[in-house]
Amino acid sequence: MIESKSNQQVKRVIQLQTKAKARREENAFVVEGPRMVSETPAHLLRKVFVSEHPTEEVEQALLSLDSSLVEQVADSVFKTMSETVTPQGVLAIVTKPEYGLETFFRRENGLYLILENIQDPGNLGTMLRTAEGAGVDGVIMSRDTVDLFSPKVVRSTMGSLYRMPYLITDNLAATINDMKRRGICVYAAHLQATEYYDELDYTKGSAFLIGNEGNGLRPETASLASSGLKIPMAGRVESLNAAMAAGVLMYEASRQRRS
Amino acid sequence: MIESKSNQQVKRVIQLQTKAKARREENAFVVEGPRMVSETPAHLLRKVFVSEHPTEEVEQALLSLDSSLVEQVADSVFKTMSETVTPQGVLAIVTKPEYGLETFFRRENGLYLILENIQDPGNLGTMLRTAEGAGVDGVIMSRDTVDLFSPKVVRSTMGSLYRMPYLITDNLAATINDMKRRGICVYAAHLQATEYYDELDYTKGSAFLIGNEGNGLRPETASLASSGLKIPMAGRVESLNAAMAAGVLMYEASRQRRS
Image (cartoon, rainbow over all chains, first blue to last red):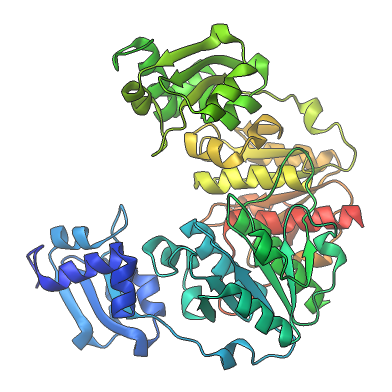
């Protein structure tokens, strides 16, 4: 059992929890709680740490795991490794999932979400979770989007991180142009657009382009879109929360594709 | 200028920021930042505190306010009064807005959101903001819902708090039954429902009943609804985030009512 906070493995987990750079260098991240650990695909699971006195739910989750990967940690040490206020007694180091472009574009008339510089971890996580629910084929993020593998994002994806193909692009403009060449209609959500989102047809290949929470899309990014769209606002609301706007759009596409 | 952290007004603000009980007893709450302060209706504004070195944006916001309500505070003291990591240099004590039932039910075929035991402040704030955008007439909350006037909820409403009629009920069952008697169809969003949300008609008086983030609606509450509904989920997503589910439903009602 690990009993010291200066143990190398403990330090490594803390680095992965707190530093995007460490996550990049190791190509790994940390997940917490019995549910997230259980949902981790076996080939991505590197190491599991369990607290000294695990709950029954944690014991249950451990049953299905390769026991050679599991290490016990003193409760006080486990607390320093956890990013949550009430640690759930199990956490794991996980290899970042990777998706090739063929996964992204395997379906004809695919549905996509393109995110520029989203900064709120809860928003990004919720967008991934909602994208999976709405049947989206892939999520594209600009490099300056908040780190997908930061603890808060991971937590709010509720496991969708393991299932939703994603792509982080250094050149968002080139990616948008590539998608357009593939016949995907790219819709920029912005407040100055003239068309309402529910007057457009998303049954063919479609992508929704969503901008930063405070500033919206950069004009040069919005100008690359095939078309603009806006969500009607009653009252004196200027805009919806970015994740909410993405969700409303993705579920409208889902609705059209089902009916 | 207030220069001491033990000043009575400073202590009062801190109480209002941190304790729902204090907010209840004083029938008041605190808003922060030039935008929220500017949006506060004049008759609700009790007192404004501004930091020693206000930004231009704060100066601008102060111009439209009754100067007899404004008091300056030393920067270090202002910091202790603020609930945000980077204080915006202005905050105000505000009387809770009140809405009578006639505001709620003034429109024929109104649209409503009914919330049971929502616990995440960001979710509640986002729901209010989205409700205003979707043209909802009122939001009903069970008493055990997170305090609408806690700093995080206030912040995430982005001002909708001042415009969206709300009602906090001690008896959710009685309120639901009252709404049904008024001819409003109450739809319970839950995972076991058989009908998809986009197959139902929301152009008549409608209310969406949304339950707690972790546990959903209590069975006895769900059983009071006129009808159940579910949002289709692709992939392996079990449910959407509660605010997202509410947003998708409210915007589907908005879409039907516009088309």
